[in-house]
Amino acid sequence: MVFENKTGNIDSEITLEGLDMRQHFLLLGLFCLIGCGEQIDKVEQDRVDPVIQLTDWCFQHWTEQQWTLGETNLPAVENQSFAEGIRKVCRARAELYAEGYEIYPFITDTMQREIYALVFSASVEDIKSHLKQHLPKLQRI
Image (cartoon, rainbow, N blue to C red; front, side):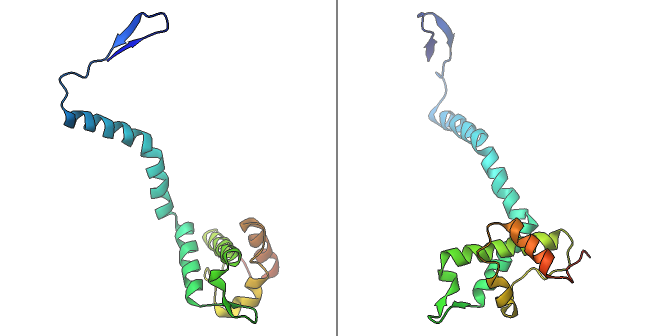
């Protein structure tokens, strides 16, 4: 391969002659790995982050309880907005637990009234603030 600049002068020459097809694919694979390394690191980090794991476990535990909404008995897990709110509640509880607060990180059936008040909160931080204010016994271990 020969590269020319705008004036027509040859800047440099790269030859790939002498490389077989296997070596071309090896080089291509190497360039792909270099470019994708950051994405792989992020995925690995998410897998080992204890707050993310605890959030996922909390949400899974909640889905197994089969909560329903209103008189229609629509499964709560099928309502996307509600389920996303539950995930935020799980995240807030997991973060407080990780920060050393004495809080059970999972959602139980006995918490329905408390949880319904939090589900449509704007952010995880809002939920954490609410939990700190409304659970007087919440303290750091």
